[in-house]
Length: 254
Image (cartoon, rainbow, N blue to C red):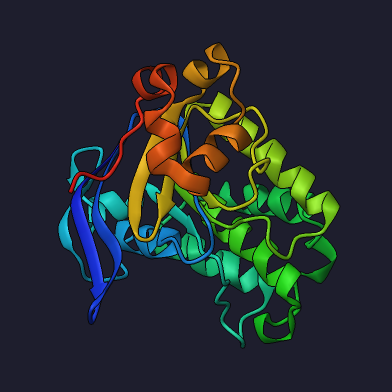
């Protein structure tokens, strides 16, 4: 579904993404985790074609900046950007027209608004929404076209407990219906036991990756794995031969 090859994004002398290589198969849930400033949001923006970068990114064999690829992708950014003079309903109608959805979009939109408790606020302007309501609307807009591959950047930030539960339920529903998800987060229990593989970023690099099935076999939690890697990843990984060989850890080569 997603193939990232040797992607580098620099801001002057700073490499926000440094030679990133990632592959995510179809019908899977992948996590992109790491401390603040690790380069996660930059990488998601590169995948969406919002930034210039060196390297290659493909979605289902399509160049990520192509119209065909964009039609099957959805994106929930870390910071929502709503049109200040469009109402909640108009945001969804704009999305439906842009994607040329059939008339069933209205029923889907109503369902999403109910799930995120926005149905009684559909006439509120984007510029008057609280941060939490903007985040809810951003999620609704991304999900309305039912994309095959969806990127979520810190999706739980700003959400109330009820909305968090709804979003976690949606993650599960999307996974069970065969969608692929890439979720960037520093909240390790974002998807509980739902994920299939994890990529850990630090200082602009993917410093390790692992499959949940292998971590389970070794009795390692995601939290264990994360702190093994980010705490002192060079020494900790090399001192544990089982972890090194069986969780497909990738360390940056000098």
